[in-house]
Length: 82
Image: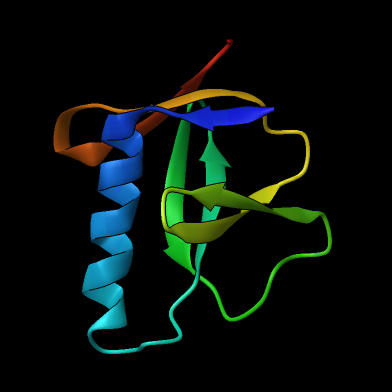
């Protein structure tokens, strides 16, 4: 199970809102990069992605990513157990 702190939810919602100004259909995919998750724009989900609700948006996340997502300095998303 993947959960998002309020800070991570705010970061992703802000990132998505900025992208949606230019592309109303913008979608986000979170890519695992070591202990962080990096948001990227995507046209479609990858084969192993699952759709996860984050506040008022949904994002694609690779299957098997679990834990608690938080946003630190410069809205870097980290995932930890729990």
